[in-house]
Length: 343
Image 1 (cartoon, one colour):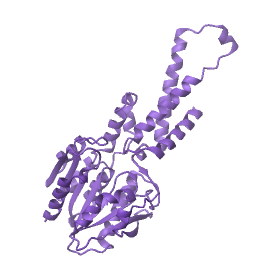
Image 2 (cartoon, one colour):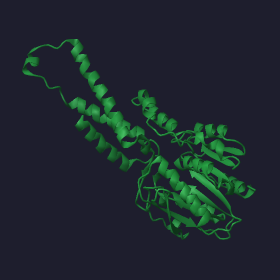
Image 3 (cartoon, rainbow, N blue to C red):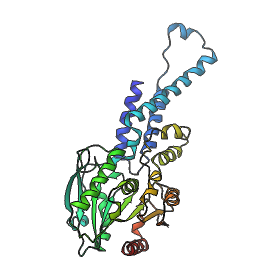
Image 4 (cartoon, helix red, strand yellow):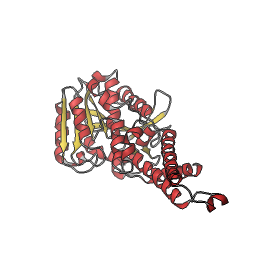
């Protein structure tokens, strides 16, 4: 068992370094656990005494050994996930800041702020010429803002300031990510935007959450004492529930399917957007979701739309990929029309 857990730990490190997609980390780690255990089982023969070698085992004894190994494997999987904190599988941060000439050409201002629990967080503030409003961006779960900021440069060109920040453990932000912590970080970013960053008091403030950041944005707006100062919430490729998306990802594998419910219940579901999106009202909500999203299926966007209160809109797009709707000129025009039309 000790050797198995050591193999699992090595597999987790390797996966954390190479994973390219979002959310699917839990399933990949699960499969590595299974693979490590199976390969170990295939190489090792049970040790038997000299007396046992001379005797023939009853069939019932030959059946019990695999059952014991299956039980041990299930226990190992549970222990590994509990030890790691299953919900942490939603986070895949990078401390490396990627230099992007297009991003740097907009001269982002470094912004440092403190979370409620005392961590130093880092963000970038991009100022537009003759700004028409300011957008707080809550990015997705991979890498850090240096790879996400380029997606929003067109909004700066359209006349909107952008404030994007890194959650704890991402980029230059201190700490390690967890579900409670990233919500504290978003609250700190909103307060920093409202009370520290330069913007005209008449400017309209929007929050734009993407993928994991959409879940963070829903909770932040729904619980914020400054909700009356926010003009709209935009969600791109959101999931409705941490537990639901984890269960779906586990169930995608024939190996993981039997374990989808017990393993998904290890996920912290306290901050899931489905529980808070009704409290966003009267702030308008726009939900954008691609019909072919391979990471978060579009039914999650529909669930949130059906649960949200008016005013609300659901924009379903045919753009392939995850968080790719902004690449479509038609979506950009529609978003700009919405932003300028919000009273």
